Every structure is written in C-alpha cells, then in structure tokens.
Image 1 (cartoon, one colour):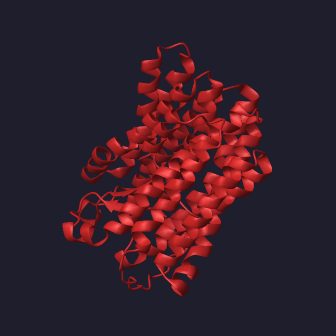
Image 2 (cartoon, rainbow, N blue to C red):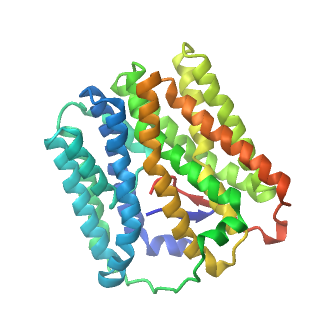
Length: 375
C-alpha cells in the first residue's frame, strides 16, 4: 500500500479521527516492516552471504510487491479491507519468524517475496536494532510482534466498507505521451528507493560500520525524506516541477559523488551527506507522480496511480540485484556510485525533456502529492 497526501490541501480533523484505527495499524505495521528490511540486510552480511545473493534476496520483496498489486484488489472486492488487512498481516508475521528459524538465502527469498505481498516500511524502526542482537532470533520476533499488534486496532474497529468508485482507464502509451519525464522518474525512483532500503544496510556493514552505526545510517537516510517532502513539494507547486526534479537530481548526484570521492571524511560529515542524499532522492517518486497528475483529469488519476505503482515496483525488483552485483565487483563505493549515475541520468533526461516541451501552465497544476517511497 502506498499512502498519498496532497500537501496543498488541508485534511479535515474529522477524517483523521474517523480513520484512527487504520492510521494506528499502519503506523505499527511500518515499524515492523522498517526493522525487517534493515535486519535482513545486516544479518545476511554477518552470515557471509555473497553480496549478489543478498541483492537477489532483497529483490524478492519487490517481486511480491508487484504480485500484490494484482492479488489485493480482487481480495478487497470479495472479503473487504479489514479481513484482507488482518490476513496479510498474519502472513507477514509468519514470514519473518520463518526467516529467523531458517537462515539461508532460499528460505529468506521465499519469505521476502511473501512479505512483499503484505506491507510497507519506514525509518524510525531502525533504532530498534540497537536494543537487540541481529545474530539472535530476538529482532525477528520483535518484527513479528509489531506486525501482529498492527491488526488489533483495525480488527476491533467498527469501520464500514468504503464505497468503490469506478475510475477511468488510462493506457500506458497515453501516460508516456502525456508525461515522459513523469514515467521515467517513477521508474528511476523505484530503482533508487529499492537500493537504499534493501542494500543500504549491506553497504554500511561492508564499509565497516557496527550494528548501532548501521541503524543510525539507515534511520537518518530514511527519516530525512520526512523532513524534505514538504519544502520540496511546496517549491514544486510554485515553479516548473521539471526544474525541481532536475535540481534535486543534480544536487543528489554531487552529494553521492562527494561520498565516493572522499571515503575518509569524518563520520558526522558522512551521515550528513547520506541524509541529504536520501532526503533529496526519496522525493522523486512524489515529484514524478505529481508531474504526471498535472497532465491528467481527476477521474484518470486513480487508474494512473495503479500503472505507476506497477512500473515503480517492477523497477524496484532490479535495483537490489543491480547494486549487489556492482558492490560484489567493485566494493562498497559502488553503492553511492550507482545511485549517482541513476540521478545524473535522470537529470540529463529531464533537461532534454524541458527543451522539447513547454511547462504546465500554473492554472492546470494540481497540488504536490506526497507518496511514501515504499510499496
């Protein structure tokens, strides 16, 4: 599930109070999922899994994510959102316990795929690694506990099933014709976010960081995106979004290049640059989706979002394997080098598109849509 928040619109307080069980359940679920991703990457490195194998295992999540976009909608129509949420949370809880019991790439890949069908992740949970040893079953059980607890507020609430609207269909060629940069941005952001979430812990561990430092690295990298969403979104509402995307990519490329070029920099400076990089690039999905929406009618946006999620998830399958193979061949510096190449390429494509088409008139622009960068 990907949650969208239009930054330019006020959300009524009554809507928040009416949906507090869903919000609370999703919040707890995100804690468990966020810890799981970092835990698996760190534990795989400690167990001596080859980096390419670790990348393949982590990619399985996004395979499951793509399958989930196909499986979930008919389930929702048949049994309702509360039962589906409870069932998927239970499966995700079992999957992480299986990973704690059977520490090998095949079992982890299968359970990682299963988890991809079920839930999303966020950054605050990274610090839970500090109070548990990743070489023991304890953090796996902690993830299971969090995922199981997420079911409680939703299952016990008296929520009515939401009415289903029938969206207007939007074909992929039409989407690309309307917004080539938006579609390419969604694909590149899928590659980048999957590399950060899945291979970030592997990179940090291979760079010599201990568990506490790995958790801190991942936490600052992910939480930085929470801080940057609003200012970047407001800026893109006031000027050509293509200019903002190009600026974000150019600055991110320079930051990643600096980390590669100066490997001996002080740890505090490294964490600052890592947070700045992630804070920038984890806005790309939201910027790209907003740019696509600027070219669509309101009735087309829901159908378009489904296509964009599928593209994003398909690209995310490739990201960890790509980064894993390059880290295996060239060492840890390949992590930020790969990310720098991706952001640089998107910046070049952005500037080329700007030379080919005029900007969207301000009267036609919708508000920036904040979307979480994980499925």
